Length: 245
Length: 330
Image (tube, rainbow over all chains, first blue to last red; front, side, top):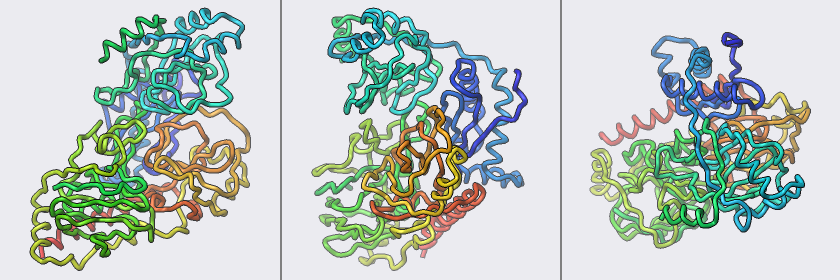
């Protein structure tokens, strides 16, 4: 509750969105606030609210200024649409610290490490002068938190990987990375949901679909989830793939 | 009614006002590049404003009608012809069975829109008919149209039906058309209004000055996702670490090479480059009509002005909506 009543920083992102800053840097406690505001907005949307997009320490709120304007004109308010939205969001931010945090979901992600599906596993091992088995052990023991989704549908920005396997991106990005590829980029780890170009060190692949547009929600992971990577054998990988068909 | 694709042209896809509500999952908004033209096209045939339409890019698209159809063509002037005669645009028209509608060459602007009375019968995915090309969802089978595709249309409502019959009886086009001058600018050299971006103050003084004084040219790397611009390079006063955060259509971001990129309809949901500016919503449809090599000047306006301009355009669209209903009565 320390900074409960300090003015929240809100920056316009054009005339139809704004960014609410809820802290600096990356930490689970700031993430909790972002999640809390996200829930508050969904349960108490203002007129003209379109959607919110959480990031590491802030949240982008998209709104329709014409609807905001119509509503406030009916209330004889002299405020501009941006000012109206700021006031609404400020009200909600006051309750952020009091909002119960949701129970954290732990999502297990089975991964077939190395070989054809993890072409950079040996590079990561040699970069840190440890064995490939040790890389896998450290990767499966991480306390990984999904801070946000972005870049591609269902792509998680994950923090909390063991820093002993933090590895810089590849100097030359690959033109196509297969869906399900599990990679490392600096201190981050993540999974590619759809085929995209990318420079991450690819250490394995999961048979799970991270993006499933016909389901609600359309992604396996959501901001706020914890990830537990679990090593599987090629036979288990095949079994997962068979089950999906 | 149905329409057969004889030639898909450069890029023809089904788009509506966009797929909202799923950006938190990393699902992009998509939707028409020029939203004013989309909305007016739908209004002209009696559809709801947000209905899915075809977005035509530059040239080459050719469609054959397998039944009489009520349609409206708006957006850029891509020299639309019906059976090789210039088609009337920005008004409802009746296209006879067997006719061929072609887009011959971009005279003015970059993208045209065709609304079909009753809308395009494709399923909504996550609440939208827009085609998300990269993820292969939405629109027509999740992809751009191809030769031999056949599009089906929905049921016409009462208003569309009455327009249809009116045109069927008179055998001539309406003499009136919507004047789009107040909505979009199709010039290839123009001034685009911008408000300061969230990292504007992080740029050095020269860059701040250059942004609003020097021309920027649209390169050939310009598509539905974004426009790479070329002009005086823009640089930060001091390097700083930026985390990925939300972006939106019209965001002007600056990668390390200093050449700005303007995010358009198929932008990603988040980005990690500093944002020097933000094109005002009222000018985004004009932006969507620029062709590669177009030259633009950015003009700084305040947030309040941007909001006023947006409301003004909403007012114009509202007047068009009322006007169309009025025309139909008499």
